[in-house]
Each structure stands twice: as structure tokens, then as C-alpha cells.
Image (cartoon, rainbow, N blue to C red; front, side):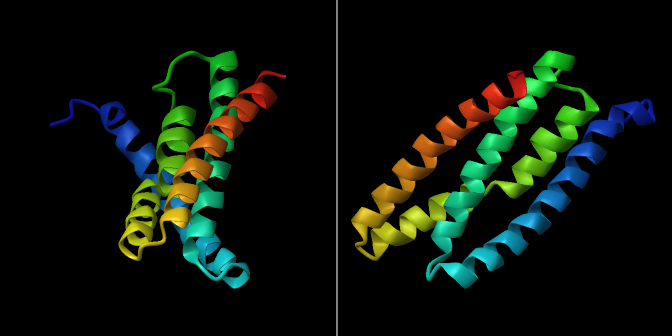
Length: 130
């Protein structure tokens, strides 16, 4: 299937990053449950924090190397931040809020996560370019 070990390297990098990011997400979700009565607040905080870190990493990556197949990019941006951010949980939280007829919470989660995710990704880019 693979002619050399180098062809398999991206899968190992992404997988290792995803494992670490997922473990940190579980820890952070449990940590935020201590402070908030609902898990969706932790999900939103984790997602916007991931967006900031992604923006920062992308700025660093673009300064150093423009290759988005670099080991750093694959491990940190695709693997780690992909495992840390929680898109499926985000969607599930919004759907659960709709089903429970908590429309204000559903719209708040969607608006807050998307708007602040974009703003923090831009802030991360700015910090990385500094």
C-alpha cells in the first residue's frame, strides 16, 4: 500500500495529534462542567480557544513555510486542534437545545461560537504575524 515509511508519516502525525487533542478536550470539558451547569458552555470555550490557536499556528506556519503538509501543520493544526475542537459536540448541543425548545440558547451557541471563533482566529493570526 505504501512504498515508503515517509508516505505513512502524515497519518501517524495526525493520529498522534488527534489523540492528544481529544484527551485534552475531555479533561477541559469536565473542568468546565465544574464551573458551568451545562456542558455547552465548555464546548463553546474550547471551540473558540481552538480557533485562536489555529489562527496563531497558521500565521506561524505561513511565516516559516507555506507548505500545509509540513509535520508541524499536520500534527498541530489538523491532528491536535482537530481533536481538541468539538464540531460534532457543537452541533449536538445546538440540536438538543432546539429539541428542548431552548431556542435562545441554540441561537446564542451558534452565534457565539461562530462569531467569536472567527474573531479569535483573526486575533491568533495577528499575534502570529507580530
